[in-house]
Image (cartoon, rainbow, N blue to C red; front, side, top):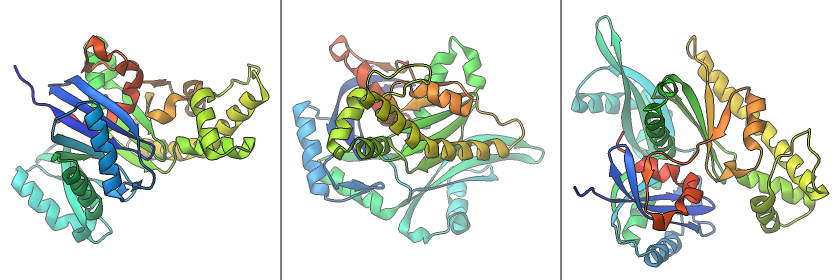
Length: 358
């Protein structure tokens, strides 16, 4: 059986992730992948600029990896992307779309004509008089969509779909949980929070019993570690970035640092995390307050920003909740020639989730 293939692109502030995938139900066959530095000044809070420069970088990467697939799935992010959760009467797709379009103005405090509106049915709720849908509404600025359309055109790609990172990461983690749930059914009943830590932003998502519950984008990322390290050690940003990549670690209070430099790096990261922990805690408190019995059982870390040694145990103490990076992905398959993918896979969760249909 021949499965269709897709090219998935996630353009981050620091790196651009490109992966060719053949989805097989909840499993994904990895055909090719690459990660290249994102050119400076081409993306800011989700909006693309200098698109010709970005297209040149992507085309070169595709040529070097001999990737010829043309159907592309983009995953996008940005604080200007607005999400709302609503409950509407159960209806057919045409009727539901009509209801959402007519009532969109009351859901979004913006000129909705400047946005592209989409929705996703999260779950069906049974009530005495019938049934309702819990729906996630997403409004994306037209300017963001137009930028990706231009990019696809310059790269000779055909847009199959555009997903936003909150939905992509939830789809991916849900698929992972279902796979693990084949052997450990308890995980399917848990409420988990996902902290997808990127270079400039962190996406906070919550899944309860396999159903999406909550999503927020926080203007906080691994570059904040770099800035603090640079300030405290008197380094340039570039010097501090290299130091972070090679030596970033949070040293336990019970351990002695190997050097003064290591101590400063550890304290820089700790100081940066204080505001981050406060903001995420407020998100968790908001979720817990929405309904009696809401409680987060597990926190998963994803993205390049979670590579700091000792981060799991530090956040576990801060949130008083088990924290771990997602181990080797259960939903992916790749040949022995691509064994190195397991060391890079943590960066590609959004891409992989974007190609999943549910």
